[in-house]
Amino acid sequence: MELNNPVSTNNNQHVHRDDVGARIGMWLFLFTELLLFGGMFLVYAVYRMKYPDQFHLSAMEMNTTIGTLNTIILLTSSLTMVLSIAAIQKKNKFLSVVFVSTTLILGFMFLIDKYFEWSHEIHNGNYPGSEVLLNKKNGEILFFGLYYAMTGLHGLHVIIGMIVLSFMLVFLLRDKITFDNYVKLENAGLYWHLVDIIWIFLFPLFYLIQ
Image 1: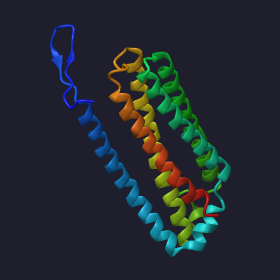
Image 2 (image 1 turned 120 degrees about the horizontal axis):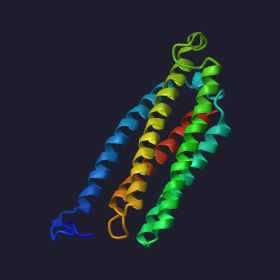
Image 3 (image 1 turned 90 degrees about the horizontal axis):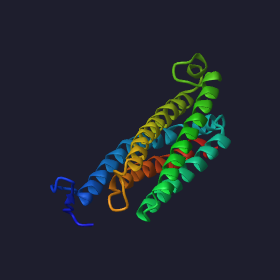
Image 4 (image 1 turned 180 degrees about the horizontal axis):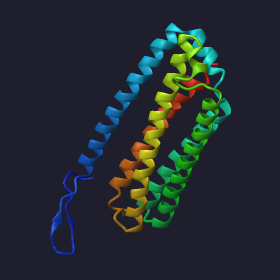
């Protein structure tokens, strides 16, 4: 798409629309997000090398079934996000709305699943500052500290992504996103894919090192 894309309005004026600039800006933002999580992954790697046995022992307490279910949910949501963009490109507003709505539902399911997982760990006393956790070894304390910090930050990104997608849904319904003006939806999709990619890295780190 051209860098400068003037759009006519009902007042015979032209509104400047820089789709390429919007995409570049989004990629730069995603890069800063990768730096944020990359730093946390680096911290995890350092402590994992220092306390391999204790990290392994702590990972045994993780529910791999729930982690796998969350992975399936997010991967499916990435697919529905792609399908929503493809639908609007083919001038099918109804399908695009359906797929964005489905993505939102899947995101909500992920959060519900994570809520029950956190509740289970908290019930078992595995949370920062608890007497149960403080009586464990340093590696185990660090594992659960990183678990809550990294999955909590990821969960926050899921919530932000759902808020953004809710706006996209409204824009679709109000025809502010159309087959020839869908860069907002495309950028929202990129953000959602980032959320999924980060989880793909979190999943093996906390659930599959058993």
